[in-house]
Each structure stands twice: as C-alpha cells, then as structure tokens.
Length: 311
Image (cartoon, rainbow, N blue to C red; front, side, top):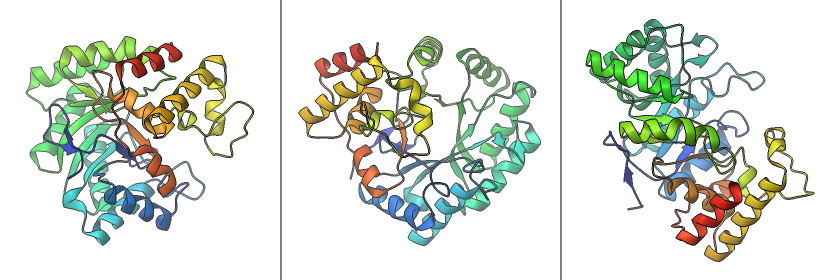
C-alpha cells in the first residue's frame, strides 16, 4: 500500500500528489492519457483532478474531453472504486457560473462523462459574484444529499469570499467548502501566503494548489539559455530572471542530494507548508509522471534554502 493521507474535513484517503487532468484530450490523446493513467495507478496514485472545461480551449474541442477520457479509463480498467475523482463547474462556456440550475445540470453532465454515479470532490471552479452564495451552496448541499457529490471545494476564490462562503454554510446548515484550490508554488507565493493561508489556518481547511510546478518552470527543463518547446513555454517568461534561476539551481542541487528530480523537490516544498494537503501536477507522458510521483521529505536546511531562493 502506497502512502496515503486523509484530506482534512473529508474521509478521502489519497496519494499525496493529485494528478492534474488538464492535459488529457489536449496535449495527450486518449492512448497517451491511458498510458499515463495506468502508470499513475501502478506507482500508487489514486487522486485525479479534472474539470468540465478541460480542454475546451484546444482546437476542435467542446469541453469535457478530459472527463470523457478519465471515465473511459476507469470503466475499461475497473478502477472507479480505487480512484478519488475531483472535477469542477463554472468555467465551461456552455455551462457558465454557479447558479443552482447550472450546478445541477453540469454535475449530471460530468457524471455521464465520467461514467460514475458520484463525484468525490466537486469544486466551484471560480467565484461567481452574480449568484448569491446561498443559492450556490444550497445547490451543492442538495447534490451531497442526493449522493451525487461527496465533498465540495472552492477554486480561484479570494480569502474574503471563502470566509464569506463558510459563514453562509454555517448560517444555513449547508455543507461547507472542505478545501481550496488556488495557485501556489515557489515562484507564486505572495498572494496565496497573504490572502489564502490566514483564512485556511483560521477555518481549519487545507489547500490543493494548482500550477504547483509554475507551469513546468520548476521541472528542471528550463535553464538559462535553453529554448523549450512547449505549449506552456510562453507562460513562464516572467520567471526567467535572477530569482527564477536561483530557485531552479537550488531545486537541482537538492534533487542531486536526494537522488531525485527537481519536480519532486518543488512538490515536497509545497507539501511542507502547513496548510497544503496535496499539490496538483500534470504529466503528458509516463516519463514526466515518474518525475512528479516521488514523495520526498526535505530537511529543515533544504526547506530553508528553497524558501530563501524564492524570497
């Protein structure tokens, strides 16, 4: 049995790395995706994050491609009972926002694509200030009562809105958000640590951060003077500076000390932060997957060096 942690406020026992499903049906076709999902399972993984909007942005796609591939894989491999599935609602162009009607319909759509009768963790994918929180949380609560959803989470919510949502749940007896999924990594710390961390600590919630490897910048493939061919390469230009290269170098040094990978070290730094449960990272190939799956324990000295490099 591989390492498992139980996410606070839930009974979800998961591998402490959540596999991001945004690449499935985008940069990884069905065959490649199945290979990654098989290897993920074989390496002890059991936690997969997707969304109804993945990957609507790709040419010829309509959204739902990632969920469809994951659903087909779980059915084909008989893996549903051993898999913890997280998906999201609000950002698909044909199912936008967090109105009651949309949440109920989007959930049914996701269940159909995933070929399952329940979603383990269902996120509000972004804040919807045009819909009262009472309506949104009431709809999520009804889905939990109906057995279609087990737990709910908030993604891309400010600390103030998360606090407000928790108060609405408390006042109305609704299920409350159990986790927060916002951006957090060694390159993007300021907003999360100032805005999210205090609310999470106060409410006793944990985070499952996305872009844990800063769009791949922390994987080790980006080095000074090296051109990287990637659909995400444009998103890391702002990291190519003295601070960014210092973080990359420190990750490489520590990976060498631990006979591991820069990706695994960057994810271990996140895991060591008090409010983080399991970081999310994606892999387009089995080779990339093997770089993110090791669960490392960093020494106090190694943590200090990484934090100092990223300050």
